[in-house]
Image (tube, rainbow, N blue to C red; front, side):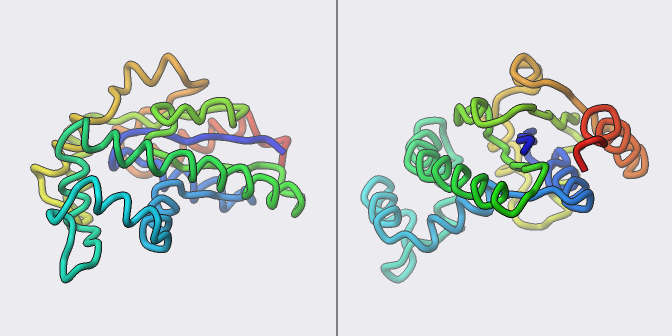
Amino acid sequence: MYKIGITGGIASGKTTAAIFFQDKGAFIFNADQEAKSIIISDKTVQNKIIKYYGNQVITKNNLDLKKLGKVAFNSKINQKFLNNLIWPILKLIIKKKMNIAEINNKNIFVVDAALLIEANFIELFDHILLISTTEKNRIERALKRKIISKNEIKKRISLQMKDKEKENNVNYTIYNNGSEADYYESLENYFNKYFSDLI
């Protein structure tokens, strides 16, 4: 089974790339969604988060994910604590899912993860794809989701590793700065170049 990591900044187009691979028959693991699931379901994790960040992440004695998002992405120190708490758990889950995918005879396993390089997950993969786009595009696309404010988007971008740095740790980069059709064409060309014989 061939293991691919897809990374890139907020609203770069990672998830679209993962869905593209899913349509090709790959097993997909969304690391950001899984991280959220860990926080929601693991009481030990919740207690550690509340102990560290305090009342600013609580609503009616319960952990408030919206408040946590604002606080955790407010500074590198705050972000580092949450990442260091979640990443080891996430790594174990990825390895388990890889085993399951292999048992089910999947030829390609794809992880969609914004902080794949920062989390030192590189060793898990045979190939890493970076989806890169301009900051302007990221902000515009992220605003369309209507989940967080423009200031919060900018703050998250400022905390993420720059694409130029990421390029030193990846096997291939797709620049998602054109139309949706252009992006799909780039994904198709990339897939045909490296993976068409695996499906």
